[in-house]
Image (cartoon, rainbow, N blue to C red):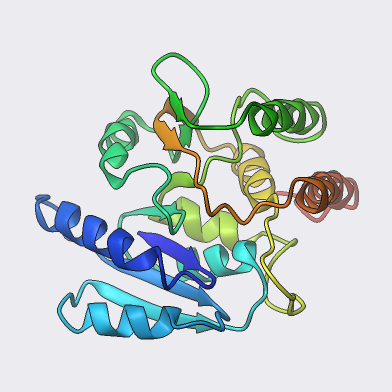
Length: 246
């Protein structure tokens, strides 16, 4: 499990406790990789303190280059057969992973949580945020990723070989990315899913429960523009042949 974290000293203790309690009850072995995205609060100290009692926890320290780069770092460092990334606030509860795992046995390489479809639950989400998401998804489906109703839910699982191939091929947020200032919400998910489809992997969208966070780092205007720019860049990179499968 990969969790990117930027200035999460307040939310991480409960998240780590919930994750550790859930995973220790499972029959499979687990590792949890926290990728610190250059936090300036006590995020790393919180993780170090927690991992003293929980050897499944690993901490990776990044420069502040944004969530997309942090997720990529963790996914390429992971060694589990199934690799899941999740938001630091557990807006999708860790227990929802039980809905994703069975699909890998049916031949899927990527299984993603979705806030759309029968069985999905959106809790306390403002109407304007839902509307923004639906407009953005329409743009995504028109330009890049086809047939997926929710590309942005931060709860996605990959078979290990798929994760390493897909994330190694990304261009938007990779080694050499510039350092940034402040929270940076991006559409790195779009590039990842676009590559998954381009490489021919089966992708399953599974409805999950999702709770809107009162401490969301999303800036409606700035991040909407940045996400739109990322979608356009994926299309542009494709036209330039950067995602060609050899």
